Every structure is written in C-alpha cells, then in structure tokens.
Image 1 (spheres, rainbow, N blue to C red):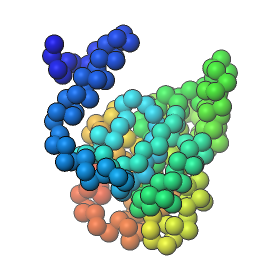
Image 2 (image 1 turned 45 degrees about the horizontal axis):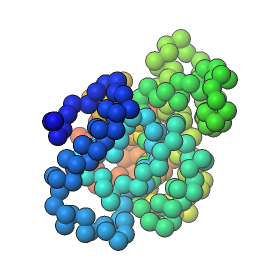
Image 3 (image 1 turned 135 degrees about the horizontal axis):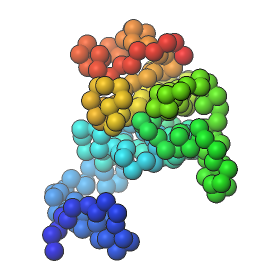
Image 4 (image 1 turned 90 degrees about the horizontal axis):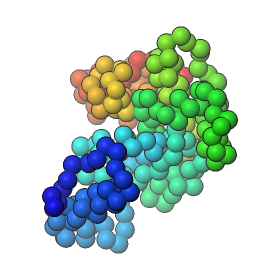
Length: 234
C-alpha cells in the first residue's frame, strides 16, 4: 500500500483512521529523532494563536515548522472569552511575545451567527451566541459576500479589543503584541490566496497608524503594502 496515499475528499471512518496513522508514520520517518530533543522536556512557543477550528486554517500557513513555535487555541469563530484560560497560559506562563487572533474568509461560524441558528444544538447555540456582540456593529448590506467579510473583520476587532482589555498591561510593558488578522484563502482582498491580512495591531487600525508603531518598524515597505489593510480607525 502507498505509504502516503492521497487524501480522500469524503472518507469513511476507516479511511480517515488510516490517513491519520499512515500520515504520522511518514512524519516519523522523515525526521531525525534528535529533532525532538530540543522540546522533549519543555515547550518554547513564540506565538499564542487564537484561531477558528475550521479545517482550512492551520499553522502550516506560516512558512516554518510550527512544532514548538505556535501555542494554538481554537474554537468556532476564534473567540477569546471561551478560551481565556488557555490563552492566559500562553501569555502568562509560556510568555509568548505575540498573541495572534486569526479569523478567516468565509468563516462558517460567522455565517451561522448572521442567520437564524435556533435549530442547532444548545452547545452550538451557546458558542454562536458569543459572536452576537461583534456582529451588532455590522451594517446591513445587499452584497452577502461583502457583509460576510465585514462580519469576519468586526469579530476579529472585537476579540482584539477583549484581548487588549485583558492583557493591556503586558502590551504596555513592551512584552506582548496583539495582532488581529484574516487568513484569506479565497483571495477576497486581492493579495493572493493564502495571505494573512493584518487588520489591527494592539488595537490600532489603518496603514499609516500601524506603520508608525514601534513594533512594526522592522517591516519593509513592500511587505507592509501586501499585508496591511486600509481601514478607518476602530
């Protein structure tokens, strides 16, 4: 049997189980066992990432091995409040210098929260209810695609606002930056599929305002033009 079979788009439980363990075997065989020694006894992440649990969004969007680099917290709609304990651990115990709150285009949780979801299970309803406040800021629009993206952005802004209120002292001490962005696999921003577009940094929006922040000074202009999204002040 092929040790690395192509993924089945609609697998049975048996196929999915085989994919997991054959894939893990490929992972093990491709690595020198000594690679694991660096993090055998402790972890050393540089990023706490709060993101949606959508299967299309993973740490692999970064062009580096995320193992021991990214402390990942996931839930539907990348919501801070339900995951605050886990995020506290990343910020206060692991002391990651970056909290990345990463939404994504065409987020199913956001789309559900924009509609009538009363027929869902109580557990799903409870999680979607957490998206109610950020969506209140959205203006009604005829263009559903634009309204959906607007809702994704407002949710990211809201979660960053909550994070600033919770970790603002760490940010002010220069030990943490809080980033709000959108992973765009649909190329809705026109920057290329798979691009992370930055909406705000430490609660600041707008290209010029972000460019002026000390934490952004290491970026060259070409990359800034690609990733910064021009918006009105929050």
